[in-house]
Image 1 (cartoon, rainbow, N blue to C red):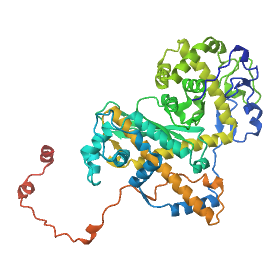
Image 2 (cartoon, rainbow, N blue to C red; image 1 turned 135 degrees about the vertical axis):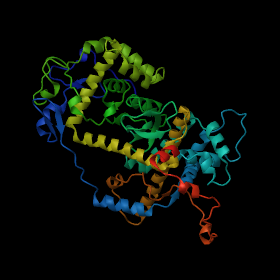
Image 3 (cartoon, rainbow, N blue to C red; image 1 turned 120 degrees about the vertical axis):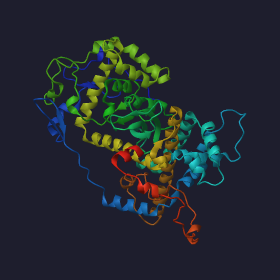
Image 4 (cartoon, one colour; image 1 turned 60 degrees about the vertical axis):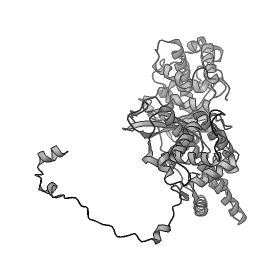
Length: 511
């Protein structure tokens, strides 16, 4: 768990020409944004409005050597079935041992590994248990439903997900993609039926359902997953997923989309030791704050608006410092959830001292992060890559959850949350297995004399699907059996239908 860091007190206020707080220490420091502006070819600040504009980043494209390596890996990936992937990861990682009946009085399963693998496959793909039982010999729909309800819980599913995250982190190939210190958070829309507590019509997506909110590591694997209503403010769950992540991978940097630009979210993330760096958009709606009335800048002063305005109230931060830290400790220890706190801060009175203090800390941190974002082109590319990665995970997990046309059939909020956990567990199993297959192919290439550049390997995503058979292996013995001719006749007289007066009125009555 990240440690709490200090917010600057009066003795640590920025100097007149300072800009903000040194990231991670709370000490004042002059930012390079002003001094580096003349050489920053990617940034232009309108001197009249103060609105910054960034030059669009154009990727260099995949190197020929990386493209050749990717094509070779894809060509050599062994064909797999989803059921086989789940079974092998269960043997290797033993995540299935997390599950079991809630009490010792429940009857034991004769083959717990096999049943837990099948249930994970069925629920992770979003197939109904009774539909799945028609295609899987030796099981019944009632049995699959019973095991899913009685032997699997949200807590146990989180533990199994963490087992796969830990195993993935111990595989060398994961180092090609990241070191686990960064995570990206984003949500994707999931269709649900209308008659349940969580279903709402999303303004963002324009249709009813819920949001699967994922925290995806820079190594491509999901650390934590929520299922939340469409109507909630997604940003309140940015910190929640980090605190509930129980795996050995504990990121300190979190990236998000524009949902993460709120003052309270920046403040709480900083107090808990997380470096929140979202993808910044809508610069016209963002305000830069000066550390004092005397602060002026040579090149970027227009960003901060009129002189003497948009000033940080450090006196308020100092007076509320101890209370802010108590709140942060309460969140870290689980006395109050971060989502509940952020909801209250968002809807709380602006006259409330706690809200005002969180807002001021958020103004400080967000201003520093905005300046970092403007002045550091490699940072912007990392943020973009991280948010693109979580969007790719969303598509990959939906590809795996192909059952029932992607609609979550359960109306119980707990079962809906479990459905997302099952999908995350299955998706992580596939990611882990793909990583192992990629590593094995790389070993083969090295033995054949290939020179593998780690930078090329970093471009190979484990979200590979071409080699995976989602629908299982179906028997082909019926191809050699010729069916009897079908009978087109039916002993029903349809003449009265044809003799009806099919006027518009008649059609309306029929309807």
